Length: 72
Image (cartoon, rainbow, N blue to C red; front, side, top):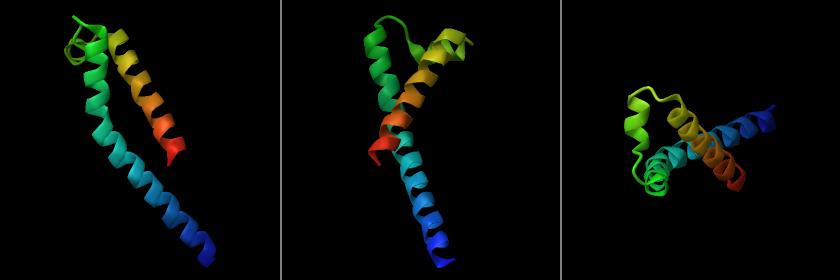
């Protein structure tokens, strides 16, 4: 029973670490995407309800989560 509880605590620690790292990395990913796209401001397009820009940013976030999650 104690081993199961310690595994839950370790898993929650990994989860919190992932959330903090992604929270810090998301603005960096948005900045990189804006530099790659050039004239298109990704965050402004999302505010204008552009579905393609939202899908692109969500793909970046999911990709970053997978990379960081596997690294931890």
